Length: 117
Length: 112
Image (cartoon, rainbow over all chains, first blue to last red; front, side):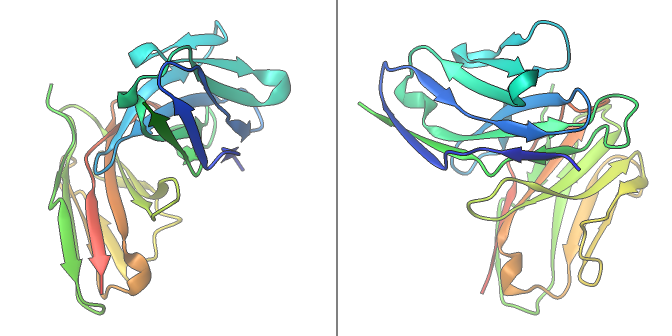
């Protein structure tokens, strides 16, 4: 069964500082990996995704993530955080094409990001 | 391209009452999902439709929850009767193919 762990429930950073949100997954083969962001009262917005190829993935709003198979990780990074980045971030794993869990996403419990001015 | 639409945005009911949520997916998206997001947790899949057929409803509490997508487009999720633990945000998502899902704004349900 696929699963996702986000070890940090809450992270606080200062505006302009760098950010790294951790994500570890469990999946039997090469997974599809996603990062979503959720602002209060809003649905989830896709930041970036990894299906295959280059393990460093660029997303929207200046975010990037790196897939490390050896560590079963897909950490999200941003070099300089803006106050508008304050939100909750979810990592998700999905089954790859041809697998029984294709199309099914399993989410981590989320990391709340607070940005101090 | 219009996004996933959901209504209502908020609903407050007493326990043992019934409630229904509506979702209209992005045009052309064959797959539709309903998720339950309890406060402090990530979304949990309740049911997945492919066109008007159910692909996965293994985590849907079928004694009280039901969902339909009769014409393969919009969908309704119903809870009857509601319990206190059903208080959550109910998210609808759709996808054209595979894993990339687009989410609606959600319906926040409070059961008193």
